[in-house]
Amino acid sequence: MPRDVTLLSRKPVDLREVAEAIVAHADGWGVRALDHGSVLQVCRDADHPVISILGVHRVDAATEVERILPDAPPLPVPLWWVDAVAPYGPDGEAGVAAAEEAARALDAVCIVHGS
Image (cartoon, rainbow, N blue to C red; front, side):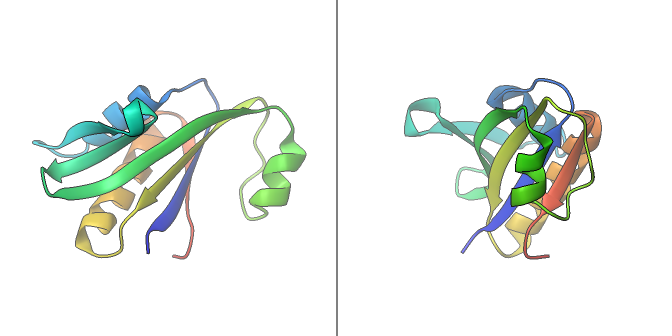
């Protein structure tokens, strides 16, 4: 069962930008494309994914963020909603830490569900 991770970016981002910001967290990490490139998975090596970035969507209504993420801080719209999942365990913890660091680099907010 993966942990859901949401990044809310104040500026436009795409899958590749988010993956690159996460990869910058640790030397030796890489990115692989899944599902014909619609998902990018950050891995510490060939057998250990740390986080998968599922998609980026523009949100134009603050009420949508409030409805789906009531604990999210108020942010101006438009914003870019990034859906990601990290596995439970040490690899996932590294992925969550990298997502939190990437959020700071991207001027975004990181919300980890089930923490």
